[in-house]
Image (cartoon, rainbow, N blue to C red; front, side, top):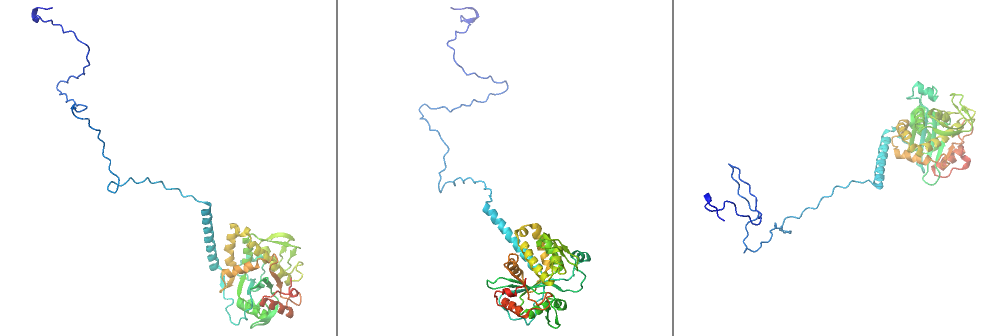
Amino acid sequence: MTYGGDYGGQDPRPAPRGPRQHQRAQMLPIPGREQPPRREAYPPRDEHMPPQPTMRAPVPPRGPEGPPPRPPRERPPRRRRWSFGKVLLSLLMVFVVFLAAVWVYLEFSINRIDALGYEDHPAAGSGTNWLIVGSDSRAGLDPEDEARLSTGDTAGQRTDTIMVAHIPDNDTPPTLLSLPRDSQVKIPGHGTNKINAAFSFGGPQLLAKTVEGATGLRIDHYAEIGFGGFANIVDAIGGVEMCLETEMNDSMTGAKLEAGCQELDGAQALSFVRMRYSSATPRSDLDRVANQRKFIGAMVSEMASPGTLLNPFYLFPLLSEAPEALTMDEGDHLHHLVGLAFAMRGISSGGVVTTTVPVTSASAENWDKKKSEQLFDALKNDKPIPDSVIVN
């Protein structure tokens, strides 16, 4: 069909559309702005070009010529764990250091005097002999302390207690020997007098010379304790238990102790070891020295007990009071004192022979010459003491 008119015989209507085709949509350019060239996702491929393999990044060879291997991952530091053995070892080391410190403190804190630095000592026999002195000096005590301890007002310095502790070299039991203070003996340079007067005349040296001359025993070590020091040590360990058979009343000092088992404090202990004017001490000085030995045995046992050594409320006061209370010879050391305490630990249990120099009467002024010689000979040669010369 043809049409005339302005169309030159052509049909102005568009030709009929064939099957719908997918065409890519295109955006019209914005006026005044050029459209950037379109990037192809893939480069054109020549049909005659063989397929190219996929390219990967080259892996560097491992070996001596390649880069070093990757370092291993560091583990976090392990927490230090304390085993029971390490804790026990640490505690043991602390304890050893503590003991060393205490030892050094005591060694350099104990008072020392020249008690045995003289010539003309007797020949040394078997074993070791200590001269133990309890001084009745009031030095260092104020009026309140003197009243509390019932020391009296005696002037000067005398020995209220004189003992010889013998430590044998063999299996013979140790011996603690009391020398009654009123014993009449020869004092070098002062004639015959009571043995305790030697301390007043010439101090520790003259007393040691007097004891050596009267007994024939060589004195190797010296230890002295005064009124105040004795009471302070007893208080430091919390008192000492004593069992008294009867009530004790001292008509001289006014001290009174009840019958039965009880803890004696420092003042009561001092009254007990000094008491001789009482119905409970009919033998006067002989009973007094027996009570002194009994109390020393109980006190040593108390000081060496776990209840004292493991209790800081008793141990530290004891360590504080002991150096001030005790006086030793210049040549003595702490290990000598430890040896003495170890040897005397059996007083309460009967492992130590306790006796007094045999005397002729209850006044204890004159020694029994024959029995005394037997006693001193046994000590000098580390032989058992005959029962016939032991005075309880």
